[in-house]
Length: 390
Image 1: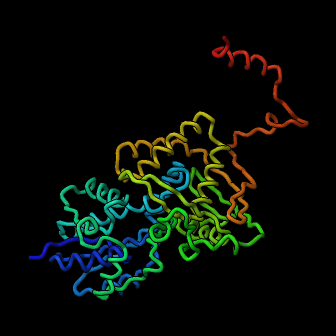
Image 2: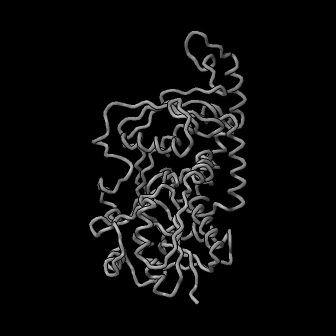
């Protein structure tokens, strides 16, 4: 009797080779594909899997769950890893792990598998997620075991076995895409002296082609959640999609990061996340308007830790749950509108408005209407300086 296994299948080079490799080793393979806004359509995935006789394919549209239960909490938390990465791939992995376990339970499978590399972060994120949800499932990781030692040898393997792939030796980037952004690595990017070529990018047009005329957009938030774009109510998936198109046109959201992976090595990653950067910027600006300074200062520390937990695959941890509870408490008054000016890769704050604003013009102004009591300043300075007087 064959051993039943559920493969987290993306349709990319790695998982396409994994499917063939696992079948050749006697597994009854069931493929599970999470639709988070991938570069491959469901029709393309079905066509790819149809090349393998007897393989069952589950495709689940998880964009709504991804947006509301994974992206939104991270947006509210202000999660930004090492100053440049808004965690698009990292946020998707625990959701994939959750549904991978559900499909395995439904199918009565004893094994789950993935196409993550032995030096990558995603093996950690998926496997920790699986173990957190069903520790009885056994994990098979072909890229840690097989004889294929490079993307070049995988391409040769795919050609030999007539496995349909889109990667070539000339365009050898590894790309992971979802609605929150695109992660790009490998190929010429491994040489730190190389700029990424324009064909690496998916969501953004080049800076040279971006329009010179700025575009203004207004985003409205309610309790930390973006609910309207330019006064039009949209669900979160649709709003993210609109902002990806708008931001992509203006070359918004490209970052190039030397990042510290979970396994201890440094790697170079290119990211493009137009909607993510627009929403992160607007949300952070609104918080600066409505939150008191002590909450803002402490929330910066929480954001740092939150991003580390997500990056390291600890989504289902008790600490992350506790931080979510804290963050949710800070969002009660994060309601209002932020208007942004987008131009040539720049996100510029144009207008801020909230009924919970802590900004008082009569205290901040240096002009007519100043109500600040100047007589208080000297006493404040005397008290403030006491610990530092010799």
